[in-house]
Amino acid sequence: MGALEEAHLAACGCDEEEDEGDLLELVGGEAPGDAMEAAVRALLVGLGEDDRREGLRRTPKRVAKAFRDGTRGYKQKVKDIVQGALFPEVGIDKRTGSAGGTGGQVVVRDIDLFSYCESCLLPFSIQCHVGYVPSGGRVVGLSKLSRVADVFAKRFQNPQRLANEVCGALHASIQPAGVAVALQCWHIPLPENLKCKSSQGLIGTSHSSRSGVFEGENSSFWNDFVALLKLRGIDMEVDSHSAILPWCPLRPQEVPLCNGHVKRMTTNGAISPKSGSTPSNMVSAVSAMLLSLGEDPLRKELLGSPQRYVQWLMRFRACNLDVKLNGFTLNSASVYERPDEDATDHRAISSELHLPFCAQCEHHLLPFYGVVHIGYHGSGDGEVIDRSHFQALVHFYGCKLQVQERMTRQIAEAVYSVSHRGAIVVVEANHICMISRGIEKIRSSTATIAVLGDFLTDSSAKASFLQNIIDTAGQEV
Image (cartoon, rainbow, N blue to C red; front, side):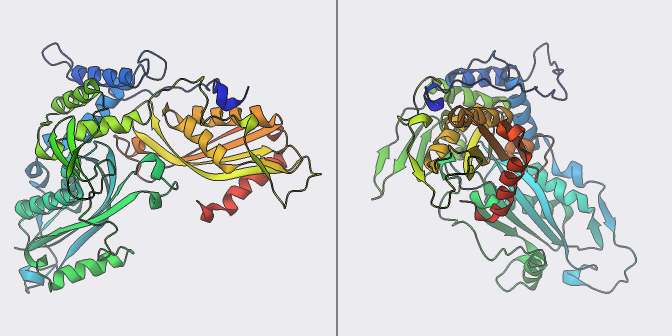
């Protein structure tokens, strides 16, 4: 029986992390996270999962903590950050400088942030650039610029409003001659549209906001600001995404009515009802999560967001692991002959590299995405398995609640059950849970490897496969 038909493989052990601050703060004898944790459990049940199984038992607590930390900006005030952080410029004479200030323009570039998309409640990453022109001979501590930006990023947001709020708050609090804010934002696409492991596969958009001397088409201060960004290779004049179209992939041209119900615009402009297949109990659970965070699910910008979040989760719904995938098994998969393959070389390595995937971390219910590289010893007759079947295999094990270590092992075991001689699998992934929680390791990536059969003892074969990944790194498909 083929590996895809059974799809019943032992998962590798995965130690659960110990979150900091496990002790719940009790208020009036009740844990403030209980309502949210109960909502997360309802989501897990709706996904066909057993919330008591190993790997999911602590997921409600982790998800609740991640959401609370990711929206802590609602409880923060800009004046508490800026107060006491304004300093007189020293070492400069009293000559009038830029816009009446004495020190000219100050720009802090490449501030790494993340926020939660208000349309689908998924995190998106941000590079923020802030400039201001001092006035009254006062400057603000540079770290305060990034901290103020973070206050508004740690809320449910859309990119343009985020830029406007940061700009407005800085202008009101430090009272400069003007403020400029530029944002570059990246949102994960739908799993089927993810093409590669890098930010090139994400949906990008650029937005800006300005006040005071930065306003106006011919503002020399804005031109200077843009020029200083270009020194870092940042071109804000090139918008990577149309401002007319919604940048959230889960939000097509819809007209929201109320949570759980939306109408979609058809191509001719008429409105037709959207399918009501989203489980209402799961939508209600997400609405309860928003309430627990102090948000209003009926706020205009959040209408339909719980439904879209559930629609995203349902793409990773637990399925029956004993069903066939696409009606074929690897044992009977179509094969083709590689003309360059030496049919007499029984040690020949067949490989399929840079297979894109998107999975959902079962610890935090957040996406991780990247590429899978598969190597195996061919049968020696020059025949190899078609790439599409390996992509289906990756999709099968990726589109569910997963951990990267287990997924790597499962794919390797599935391939080994067909090759019977050797299999090696490398998975490279970016974990959104690494950027959207307290750890905030923006540019981190995770690589895992599983080696079975002949690759365990044949170090040259393993080295050859790994070198092939390096040599084709610029040829991702």
